[in-house]
Image (cartoon, rainbow, N blue to C red; front, side, top):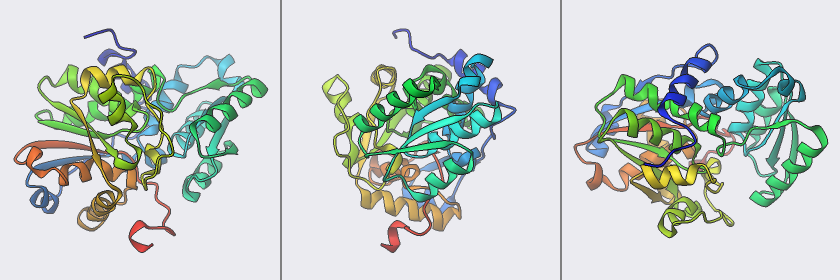
Length: 318
């Protein structure tokens, strides 16, 4: 395989670097969901991570590697919410100001969280071009250090620590499934699993209404995310130049699911496991439930990516 932007050694180093700050989240099981899926499911619960999402791992790893000069200038990013909150907290942990570009459609619960961690927010139109343009202007004005949500080697290595913990606790998995938006979590998962657990399949799960990762791998080139329409607001962005080749080499396939299946899976987790997850986190379980024949009888690890939900706008109450 070609040289990647991050290695298993980088993931292991990230695990040591963030250990004083990040939670080692639990791996939970559910007999009820196992029966429904007709397989053995192991849920890596990043909804219990700091800021309520796996994003803290990558953000903290990246910020922890900055110099004092870089920290003094502050850090910046564009994000629909979870990476924004993660970077704000990681920056605060190391005394760095955080400047965040958020789409104006970002859920209120995520906007409040970002502001609560002390970040300065700039709102923009809900398109990738608008986000990137607003961030460039911010960088020019402030001179801060950009920490990309996924197209950043230290972020990818940090996200891989979730799979590192999962495979340490449940080493004999047949398959690991993670959601994919920009590909940071799936890339880190794929690097870790392919090096640490030879023979374990790595799959991505993606909303059908935002399936640019599926189309990109099919076409052999990065395709933009154009007017994505999905309830999974954390999976709206396109793959990056760092994440795309990792997915090409180390991810078996991307499974697409519609919003109805995502909502059903989200509600099942709430009802059967008594834990709170957001729509993006439900996408991998939806992929398993919608393709039972492909997973029947296997041991499947699922990364529940986060639990930041607007409780005033639950999808089954619309």
